[in-house]
Image 1 (cartoon, rainbow, N blue to C red):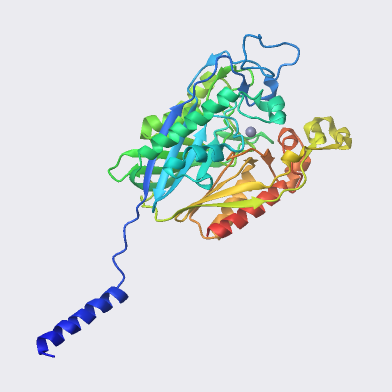
Image 2 (tube, rainbow, N blue to C red; image 1 turned 60 degrees about the vertical axis):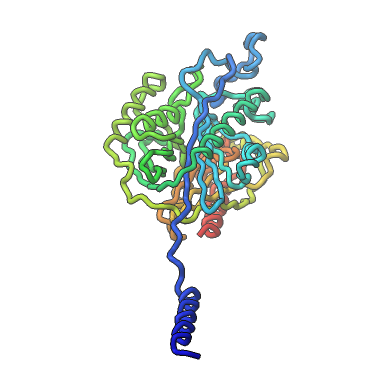
Amino acid sequence: MGQSRMVQLVLAICLLISFVIIPPARAESSFEAGAGAEALVIPQGISLAGYFQRRIWLTQNPPSNPNATYFQASTGQHDVIRAKATALKINNKKLAVVSLDLVAIFPGVREILAQRLTDLGYQPENIIVVATHTHSGPGGFANFRFWELLAADKFLPHFFSEIIRAAEKAIRIADSQLTPAVANTGGVGLDGLAVSRRSNQPIQTSLTWFRLVSRAGQPIATWVNLPVHSDLLTPANLEISGDIAGEVERKWEQRFGGVAMFFSGASGDIDPHGFTRDFDGLTRLGANFDNMISSVVPFQNAAFVPKEIETFTYSQELAKPYLNLGACVSFLGPFANILPYIPLPAVFAQPAQLVGMKIDKHAYVFIPGEPFQNIGEGIRQAGMKAGFETVTTVGLSNSYLGYIMDADEFNRGGYEACNSFYGPTYGAKILEGSEKLLGIMK
Ligand SMILES: [Zn+2]
């Protein structure tokens, strides 16, 4: 072998070794995001879902109105009711988060959407559907007798189809807008805006957000987590409205652009405070909110390109479901305690599907009900202990299994305890399940 061939051979071996032992330059994350929104066409005179007080007994809606049966008919539409969606894509895996201006989500919506979106490649477990919990949104969305009679009025198949159409459209728009993006989180304390529904005492909470912007700097979407019941408007209001959620989304979009999606956080026991409970009050709340966010910097923390996005599900078994009649009339004092527990139908006897979403070091826990603030705080602490940088609990997700509280609150009775169906261990079980979920997510 000549010397030059020897050199060539050595070089070739060196080159081969370098391929094996030197890792290639780390490929940049393929993260993309897109957003879309679609207004729902609201049927004329449809009843509003959110307050049992709108139930009618002796009077009837005119037979010419097929869209309101057990609850008072709406008299008009004050503001838009929307489906909003964020699409995320990483390493060819897609995920969609949809927010609907409804009081709750009827189970099965994510499966229906996944079926209709097979051409785009969304799996049911990668679709998350949340309700903004507006108490002045349209009813007719729940194909379930219990909810029909107590909260959502008679099921309207044509309106349910409209909800699905709008949600699908919002996801399709979001998917078509997918573009390389960066993410950013932030938050600010809320003073004097929230009050405990249970004690009427001011409650300290905070506004947090997750914002997506294209790499070219165009706003895409923000998940605005504001843990307050979207119920500024009272049962007296008969105009369809997105309530606080709609107002907050409008203000955020006007100021920062993109699509804003309201998450109701862990707000089972939190009401708005300091505003008259009518449209004037809503306008003032919007102005106050806008003023507050005008001084925050949406890019408070450094923007980052997510490298990992994953969803997880944990199925948490719950105690036997029953209606605690005593809690519903706890104002009667000791007499209430002798009232029986009424077992609920088998359809209630189901585990709670807790859905987690991990975006690098940020954890979202989606709960199918209304967790109280301290349950959300417990979940946050469990997530921090597991090593996450931020942990956000989002109620009213994918389904609705009532209010979620600890044993003390359950035993105290009252409206929320009356609407809590899994006994005094419910809060502890959701907390336990969330801890397990966060453990898997880690
Ligand atoms: Zn509620």
